[in-house]
Amino acid sequence: MDIRFATDAEVAAWDDKLLAGPDGGNVFQSHEFAEQKKLGGWTPRYVMAGDVAVTVLEKSVTGLGKLWYAPKGPGVATVVQLGDMLRDLQRFAAGQGVFVVKLEPELARTSSALLALKELELVEAAPIQPNNSTVVIDLSPDVDTIMANFNQKGRHAVRRAERDGVTVKKVDTSDENCKIFYDLLVQTAEGQGFASSLRTYEYYREFWQRFVAADMGQLFFAYFDGRVVAGAFALVFGHKSTYKDGASLRVDGAYGVTHLLQWHVMQWAKDKGSLAHDLCGTPPSDQIDNPEHPHYGIGRFKTSFNKEVIDYIGVYDLVVKPRQYGLWTRFGERVTKSLWWRKHHESWY
Image (cartoon, rainbow, N blue to C red; front, side, top):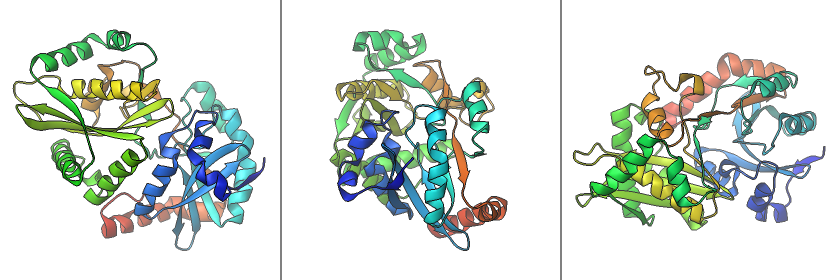
């Protein structure tokens, strides 16, 4: 398979190429996402693997070489398609001074897929994107059928919030609204114990405004008694949509605020052409009913719309230079992430 960097003309039409790929495209492979990641120290590399467009993010690691990461890529539909490109991709990456390529195709984690992956001599690694396990809502039916397909708890919560006087609006990503949403996100994160995973306000504002400018994103606020009590930012890419960021406050007298908010997000996404809405992250299917899991509450909320949890294969490392990769896994990754955190107070990935 011919592996090469994309031409300028190909990069100019990059999102169209992704959408034409075997998996129908993924927003985390998009040109907009790659450009956003520059704020985190990554350099986008746009690679053509035969006819498949692959967005790669690059960082240099002192003493080891370059690390490549393909978020939710390459956009293949089967393990066989993935295997067809690995040898040539490995050879191409070696010529660019790369010691490992982290691959994250959105393939279902089935027993047959795992068996096939073993034959590819890839190394399973820790997940990076939040939706390694997730719930997906089918948006292809009419809106009444979509609502009817929710679990009883989800339908009740949406209707109850409407009766309690909760309203939801699409709002623009002005600096003022971005600040309101970010402050809400911080409050939520502090209350649920994940504040350390948040990036800076400037990063989020740039992200939200970038995707809105590209007509791929929308910010929503939920109101109760005249104040903002919840917010959500969602993305649409081709026939798929994603619930990217969300935050809410506990409100006396209003039940189901986040359910109603998500219902409005789904309707917007459907109007934009989405056929499948990713709620973006739950515990794995075998842990979804475990109250000790740190994301048990998140899982309960999302499975109130659809009880089926999809597990993806996650991240696999294509080892390019074994010696350097061995150093990376033994201590290099841990040290690199620690130093980056001390300097930037955010995740290296």
